[in-house]
Image (cartoon, rainbow, N blue to C red; front, side, top):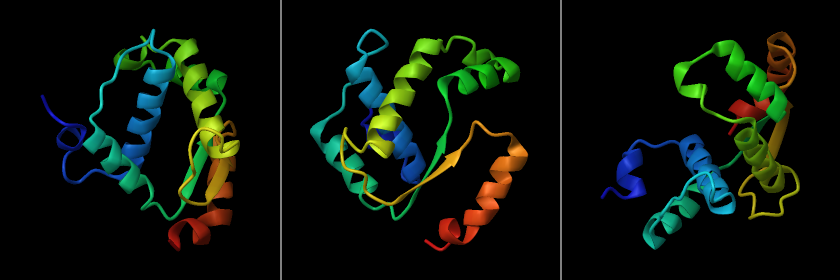
Length: 135
């Protein structure tokens, strides 16, 4: 059996770690979806990586927008994602990055409204480019 560290490989990014962490939180909180086992060593390793973040960009998107974009993309592997799962993940990100009530946020958070169209999101990115790339 591979450890989480082995599964992610030696060149993992902090983005991958955050996504895996949120997935694990959702799996723990919403056990009907799946069960994820993680060793104490892997948990400590994940927390160490999270605390290395210097800045977080949260592309805040409503579950409805995510679902609509999934349907528009029409990718085979995304067809099985239910709206309930997107709702659950959204709640976890909101609790973590906005309300900061689930566990500590290791770095300042820049929230970009990703419900906007691409042109508006690019404009918002350009307005914050210096802040995002300066870290």
